[in-house]
Image 1 (cartoon, one colour):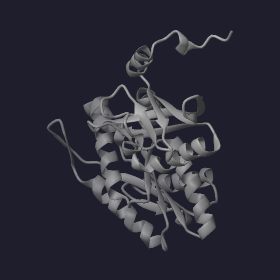
Image 2 (tube, one colour):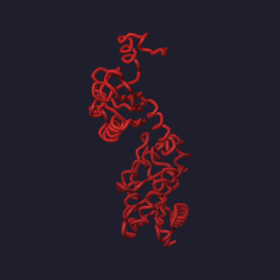
Image 3 (cartoon, one colour):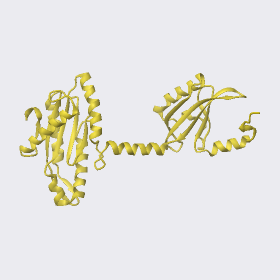
Image 4 (cartoon, helix red, strand yellow):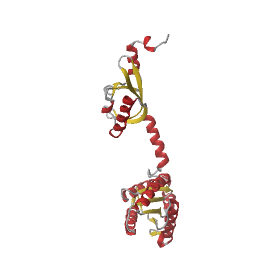
Length: 290
């Protein structure tokens, strides 16, 4: 004779197990909306009212397919708790058979917020410079590939600006590496505020930075951006009661004139930057003029 759990476990114990579970559980009503129990007061009654706006439609569609077509699903989505806290949930929808009311469906979810936060931290470590918080070389390469694809498709131009802080070693030697790091952080902030919204600035390492310029018409447009960068970096820095001034040597390469891939354009911009430095520092030069 088949043994079934509910023959031995009272209904009030079932309810206690559900309420004390760290996970959420909903039963789908006839419209496909999840309604049920939850460990959070007022949260388990109707899931859709708490789901983050951009995640709502895919979840609604999955729940309707589950109820109407018996199609299980696994989905990650965000929800906003009554106290305003944002949580990440990993939900699994599955059909079930109930003797009293025929076929139904349920959605169970677990809180994966801590995992998502750790994932975001690891992603930031992989793609951002820990000192300046600017994109690193890896993220720059990803954005360049995306931008190059669009530039080829829509016949746009791109430019790579390569800059080096002049005599930065002297700052480290005179004031120490901690002050040098603070100067780099302040310079990175100034760079971020001196470029246009669609452009990207990244730290290549040491005191070298690169800016990816998108969708410009003429070389003069890039020259204006370079001038704005040089001007903002030339403003004195106040550090630990000291006033410090730095300049930069800048080189520029352009797509498609100077190259069609990231390595070529970086090398051309780097070559132009060194030509600027040899010219006497605090200059900029286009690769095509070198």
